[in-house]
Length: 625
Image (tube, rainbow, N blue to C red; front, side, top):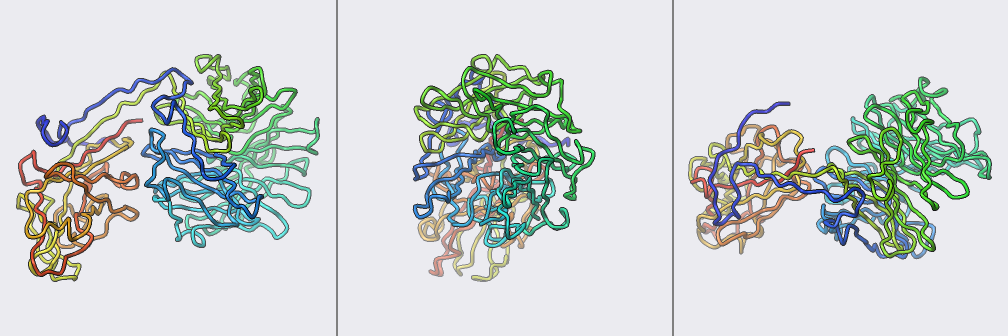
């Protein structure tokens, strides 16, 4: 969508605001490291080791938030009374690999629910995090708010379940979110001596979606009717659901495995236009897929990663056409098996924007194992520009090391998550032909739309009077202990629609203080955020005094930047509420409405009506995909 509008003009200033050029965009190119090398700007020499507090911390899925922060799920052996139960966790990292301590508790969320286990991640459009797993013997899914707390509006106290039968046990291997917000869990049903594909779908509130196969779940039996493990799930653009897995006959040599696929229509029924009756069994023997190692190309072709079992196990990648047949343009047969001279297992797969395919797993190195990654061109040939003849092996000075999850950043850098020496391991690798250009936009508050609002009477929480013409606005309380609140407004529409916002700061300048400094008596100065206009109109109005901020937005607080300037750094959650199609507004208010002294105590803050150098500023850093 084409948008019009220009940022306001400003002059260079080296005084109080770090020489930011108001209203202009500045760009800095970031040169990428050679393809496949560990990124030295990430963690320590390209990797991060995180101890979750147990002797066995295993990282699984890794996903990227829109702001570039990284989420890794896994499980830890924290239950000393039950060695069979593994406690699920999620850790969030900043873009440089540092643990983001503002998330959950010291950067991590640990679901201390003895009956829930899960390490498969997906992010909703609103930023909430979904973790797929099991609850007792049923499919289970937990949902977390942007700050890492359980979303108690979902399911029962944040966890939803789907029960298939009293005699079966369901295991989740992957999770995906549809365009309409419905949540799909895929895995296996184990009942007696049989294992079948199992798939279930939840409504956005956590209730079973009874429009899916009339029951909320579907089971698939392949020809052998014995051991059919469901492993991966992906949603096509037409909302059909693809599932991958592995079929064994008897778990004996010579009896498998074979790659399998199934495709479901949006109503949960098998898509009979796919394979045979909606199911596919690969004709290439000894191929085993792994949890989540499924990806869809832009043209709809299906890519599955795994291992070719043999005298020495090798990495394997298979590609299928949209009708379920093997794509013979990929490596000649549709299956590429890569022998890198030792035993390798493929655990995760992803596709770059240029169509190249990356697989990650583990490689046996004498008495230890290490991370292994390989990259393929779109025709299935090894990309010899990646690492050493297409392969990258990483040893983080550990013993048991394995990459289990994979994600590709918008700049092409590759994240691999797994374990090393019983701890969570996360590494980032560079791609040679990619770089990111960061841009900084500085917006100034709109004079016609900012100002102060005074409460109608003490503790009424209603606006009584306002002023949008003055060069300052007030925040605090007046001589009758009625509260002042300030509103500032920015036209952020010039931001590109596709901008990925990585950071934002709001800066205000104090003109003076009346009475006692409210920063010492009224608690922190808070920022309430609204994507769009508080009262439905961009113009300052009395309703703005108590109008709600954007649902889910947090209240950030100000800290001194210089003697007279204050700055609030927007939280990761709030970055998603910056409006790219109009105005973004903020309300300033103290934690306490007044200090009950019947005396005026307020800050005077320069408004958009003041001279350019004093106006409130919103500084946004972003990059373009």
